[in-house]
Length: 149
Image 1 (cartoon, one colour):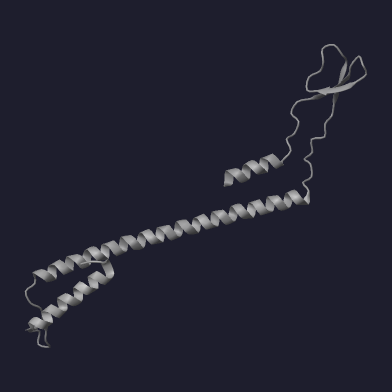
Image 2 (image 1 turned 45 degrees about the vertical axis):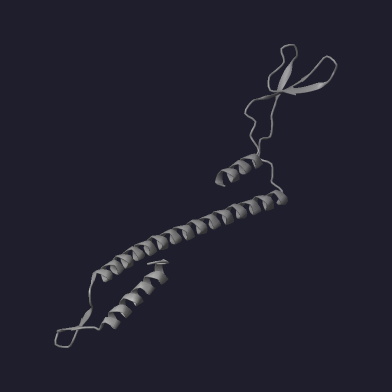
């Protein structure tokens, strides 16, 4: 987009005359202008006003609208790129979390029974029904967060 804006800006600017301009009158009385003096006729060099032409209000408005459009496109592209980066980061984090949950689920399958520690620091084993409920709750959590267990 910047290159398009630059190209249009360059096209709107007048180019200064880099070569001399010559004026001569031919045998029929017609006046001619050229960038090289003729070989068969007398010529004089003409001074050309090379000041930039004034840009009218319409051209300024077009240029302003085009500049605003380019800036808007750049802002939208940056917003899309930021949103894409955020989505990719979230997907990586979700995949890592699911990998860890599935590893824990595999570990839970290898444990024969669960326990908790009481106030004295002693193991208190839970019932078989409680073991099944813990496993099922964790399987459900993995399925909800990762889509499958």
